[in-house]
Length: 113
Length: 111
Image (cartoon, rainbow over the protein chains, first blue to last red):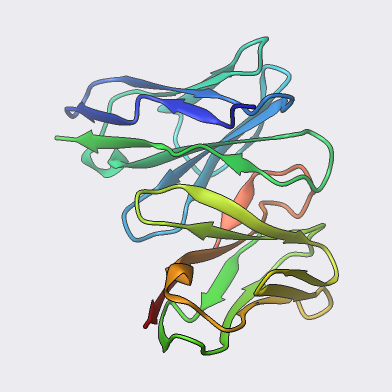
């Protein structure tokens, strides 16, 4: 039973470019949450997708957008990349019912030059 | 929205010592999460609890909902326990929310 998988594992971009990160949830999970973790900090909640819609959003600008597909996989898109977007991007999946643990992928390390 | 305070930020201890990490949050919640993160990034869920106490091996987690406080204890600590331990709560308190994380406690257990 595969857990949460994210791709790519590492990515290097330059300022102003756009990036797409991908996440496949754990089998049976229908909810995907995305987090940004800067070096030495705790993860910050970006948004959560359920039933192909953004259900909840953290304090991130509109440059950060996402999508969820019918098979529950998800993408995180970031436009007009800034140096400050350099971080580890984590995807977590869960069941939509209350009080379920979130299962995390290993993350995508994004570096902006 | 919920805010999480975790202490200490860094902790170095000798093998065998009893370890305590504390977490406080600001908004009532349905459940609190304790997670472990190793170098390289992978995050593993250790506990999710909404009341009382849970135990898994040498790890014990407690929560006081009235005081909005939780603790993670490690008994008979071992160098393999060295990791970052993070407390997290639902962003707005609801059980299916995204999570707000503390800054983490960087634990080093020396042999």
